Length: 357
Image 1 (cartoon, rainbow, N blue to C red):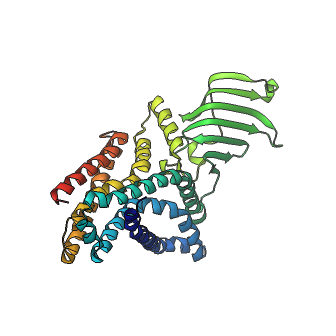
Image 2 (image 1 turned 135 degrees about the vertical axis):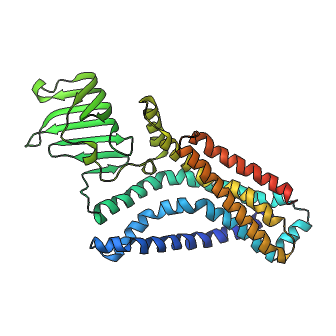
Image 3 (image 1 turned 90 degrees about the horizontal axis):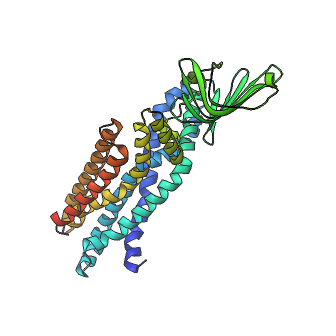
């Protein structure tokens, strides 16, 4: 990394360290007072709300990521302009694109690293937050829980372990079901690649069944249907929404739903959103920075910052509108969300010409 790039990025990281605690703190403060009445009605100590907010932290950071990184870039240029450094760089022949380049690369690398790391922490933390809320605040009985992506359910006389593929438990993969007697000894054991619930029956596909009556001799089957003592509504306290899955689980879910002829738009939307939302920082910087860099003199800083923030908001609004179109099935989310990043970036390059920077 060149000396001038390190010099430019120093205020960027400084502002990021300042902006994130402020924005996250404001978000948590609003959340705290919003949820305090629920905690009181549940007869829990008020400080237990901090446990819920702790689990919510990765999701909050994810929601604020592109806004904080883009705003940090804008404030860094304001800082450089007020101190005269920006004018000095321009006098030495540095173009606006050359000045913006370190910020764009840094934002891209940080966002890419965040996409990878958040995939490990976000689903687990989001599930713990929802589990805390459903069981401790809403007082629901936690019959089934998700551990490392697997559903573990203990019925009256049965066990079920499986990977949940939808927001309910209607569709499962890698299923292990065991029915036991009052002494805890197995009566029937089923291993199946897939299972789904329809019209009061559970349908197992491509698996093995062992029964005590047959001395647990294994029998292969392509499809085996039976009525169990539980239905999907009684298995999960916390519904396994797309946000609670890791990306590879979401992709498996999409493939399964597509093969089964079931709607998979929301699954695709979550995949695209988890990949594109953090990376939105880069197009937002490209789109908003020219309005700030293109201004001259200290008195133009207010105008430049105002315009750049407006462009930032317009970029966010455009992305969210395109995401909404994907959620409604008007266009493929895997296409429309990445396309929106490209459109915002191209509009940013147009802005570099419009503001003559």
